[in-house]
Length: 225
Image 1: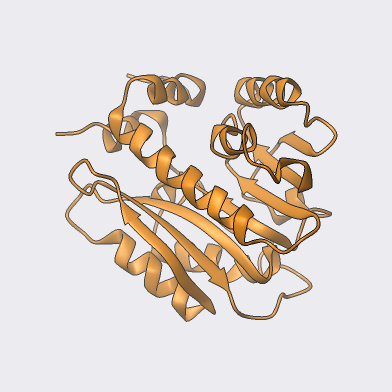
Image 2 (image 1 turned 90 degrees about the horizontal axis):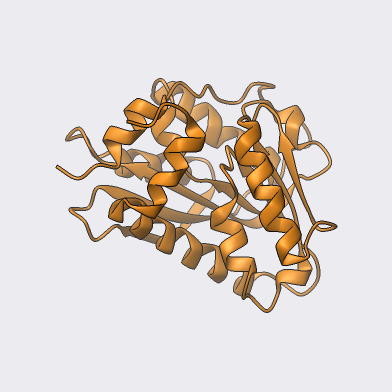
C-alpha cells in the first residue's frame, strides 16, 4: 500500500493500468505540440507528480526547445525527482518545477494563459461535482483561445464519471478533440479538449479546486479487480 504520493508514483513501474494511461496522456501531449502554432508553446501542469507525462514526451519531440512550462506539485521529493529529469534533458532554462499548492491560481501567475493545460490525476481526487465544475470554469483563466486541456478520470464505482466531465467541458466552451479509455476494462479515461472561448483576465476563484484524495484511495483506483 502506498503511504505517500512519492511511493504512489513508483506504481508506474508495476501497474499496467497506470502505464496504459500514461501512454495515452503522452500521445495527447505530443499531438498538442504538433498542433501548436509556430513559436513558443506555454504549458502549465497542476499536481504534476514528477512530471513524467510531459518530460517523457519532450525527451524525443522535435519541438521540445519551443516549450516553456510551469509544473506545480506539493510533494518536495517528487519535485526534486522532476528537476533532476529536467536537468538531464537540458531544459532547466525552459521548465520551472514549483514546490507549491496547485489548488491556488496564484501558483500559475506569469505562466498563464497557456497553450496546453495538464490536469492529469486531478479530477478523480475532488470532493464533489461542484468542485469539478468550479475547476473547469476557471480554466478560462488558464487557457488561451485554442489551448488544449488534457485530463484523466477513473471509472471505478459504476458511475460514468468521464461522461459528466465531458459534458462540463462542453458547457464551458471546450470542444472535444480526443477521448480514449485504457484497454484494461475501460477503467481510466483520458480526454483532450480545445478551448474555444475567450480568456478571462482574472480567475473566478483563488482556490479553484480542493484535492481530497489520498495515496491509499488512489492505489485502489488503479488496481485492476
